Figure 1 (cartoon, one colour):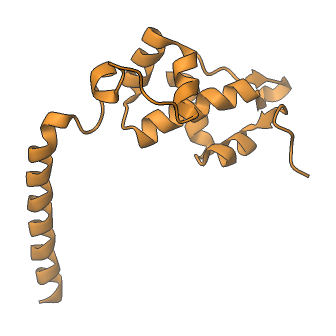
Figure 2 (cartoon, helix red, strand yellow):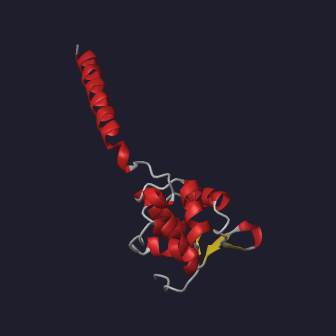
Length: 136
């Protein structure tokens, strides 16, 4: 039987719901002070629905939007938890809050396109040479 939307989640249930390993959730707790699941005796973690919403936003920003940990920390400092929750819900970026503008730390800044394409061509060329060496 599935849990209701207001039920607490164990770390394994939260990890499954967010499609990340459990150790990632534990790691995020060390990097983001705003991630504080309830802990019971023995240290068992229980995530409230609000915790899951914040984690969903952190996951989207880190994995889908290209933010770094420092970028998410800065976004939280500047715009708060509501912004992280909105990101998890697929909320659009407000003016001036796109990853390149707000965090200064996305993996692909707009001005780096040509450099990335050059690096990609170099890597493809190296792969072709390696493949040739392995066949020969």
